[in-house]
Image (cartoon, rainbow, N blue to C red; front, side):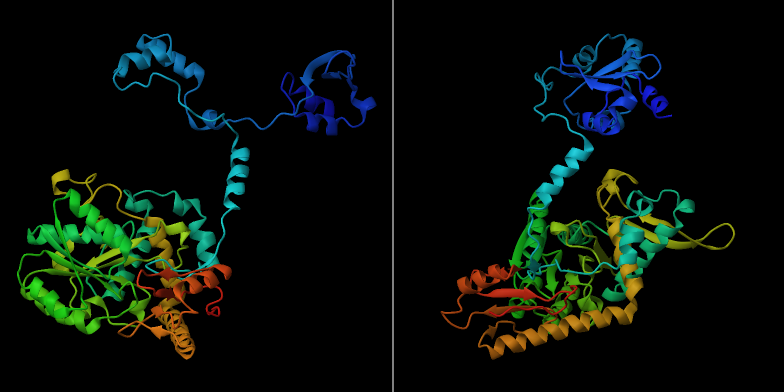
Length: 497
């Protein structure tokens, strides 16, 4: 039976180690090394004749990526070339591609490798990473992904390979989950409409700026300096290409902010709530909102979903639009992304929202049915009418965030937020007892800015001690350090500074 198995692979090449192990009993299979040449020979048990020869050098797994992932075989390619009147693929390429853009040399690529070898190399590179405890904040926080969500959503190809649900009749589960995501965003922000996710907080803020420009027909936009730095960079970069003038102000000086808004020249005002240093300027935001409404300027808040379980909603402060990231709802940091963003607005701005909105309707049997109610992407409607391009959503991560909210429920989310807030207050108390000064000017949720208390505990000293403890903090040019408390497996782990 063993010999029939081997003979079925007649003329195929074997891994030398495999053959040697399989043929340990030389007398049984008749394998021997010929002294006159460096080749292994196998004799047939039936008549003793040599059926094939193999080198002694071991073979690695074949690099078969091209054959697996490029559909046409050599026979198919030759058939298509002959049909088109060509003998070689090079002749076909030179005929259809202009010489001015044709690369006149071979691609500079490494030698092909197998999938197993590539995975081994990637693991070696990954093992060079050092995973520290990160307390930088600025929209990125440690979190716990419930195992049931990890196993059934994140690692399930039925969820992570799915595309836009063009056929609602076979996509009711995904549509219902995205509908839950929208409902969660509307509940927490207090605003009537939310879309089915965006890419990240920075691009969501840029989309909100574009929405404000379309709504007001004003090409000037206000940006608060206490927004997260990546948000400022993305908004400024997007504005430059759209010829939108950005004016940076600070809500610290609320009277100055109100004076600028009162000119009536600005389409919107984007501010962070809580801001990038952890301050919660609820009273000042409410005062600014009165001026923005009287001047038809849209007030946009970039906010934190988990904080919104404890603090006032953007709608109650007078905001017209809320944006942010749902990363804290069970989405790993992932070296900075991707994460699902959100955008919500008042009902009056519904048709100007980017991306797509899932709605609840009734089918022919008068039963509830989910479907894409509004699609404003350029692949769905005329480009001049579109409010966003093709790449607008993070459906998988939005679904994970929605299931995270369902998994914990409203009270569970509040318990998580309350525990994080209490740990922040414990840290504040410990730092003040040690002589450090807390620079925050308002109440905080989970982020504080700390000033060194002496020359012995200067910023450089804090950086050195944090490095020794493998902890990432955020450092400011003015000598301060910031830390954000996170929902980690060890929710209250601190170090002596």
